[in-house]
Length: 130
Image (cartoon, rainbow, N blue to C red):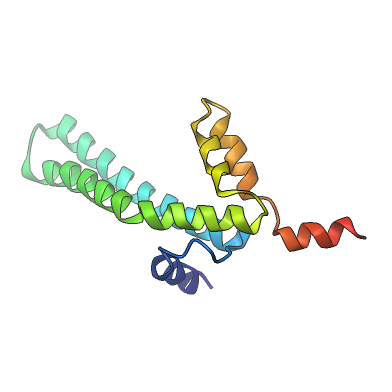
């Protein structure tokens, strides 16, 4: 359930010990993507209005508002997103330090994304004994 997953994302923002399965993690990432996409579209509309009609109140509200909301949303979700990422890595059987793969230029984010798609450690272990 998407609503339950998103509620858990906010309520367990400081719990680094629990686990997070693959589906719940990517539901949260999809939610973030949808929210940022909506804010980006609003920004583009505001910039387009500014280019077409000159500086007006409505386009400034759209541009400044979408940029401000993006910054606030980013700051509000930073800790919970780090928490859920660490919980997902733990659930995959990886050390939380795997998160620093993100810092490797170009390939790092892709390697980290791959690590975040790995199945739960219990699932991997059960397949290895078959």
